[in-house]
Length: 193
Image (cartoon, rainbow, N blue to C red; front, side):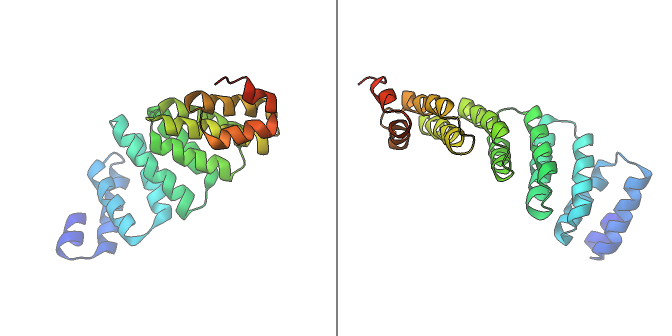
């Protein structure tokens, strides 16, 4: 009935009502959930879509589906609803499914930084560094961790280690050299030629 309202009659409101009735009668009706997802997205019914995505994640058979739905949910919670704590939890659940998911790691890092949760951010930066595909990314994550330790957490000794870590991958990384010189001129000499 929902598909008739949607596809034949072009009545989205009636289609949503029909699909909502279908999921009320059968809480595991995947086709009705997919249709509601499509309709709620088109109609920009964000609160309903957030609830629906949560239920679709519960019903998803594959890890890939849970990850993809979780990414969408995290984005909605962050961008559309400004529920940052819920978005953080959602991205953490995505990472429980796939600890190396680059997009989830980046989204979580951004949220943690915006929330000032720097200790947790350092853990995510370490994860990002471990899954980085190229040396330049590894250098950037180490440098960023050093910068946070130095400027946000006032831990210069730990910051030195992260800057040195960046330089162990790229001995010419100018920002890390500058940071080491600023923090401990003797540390630069200990890196060798």
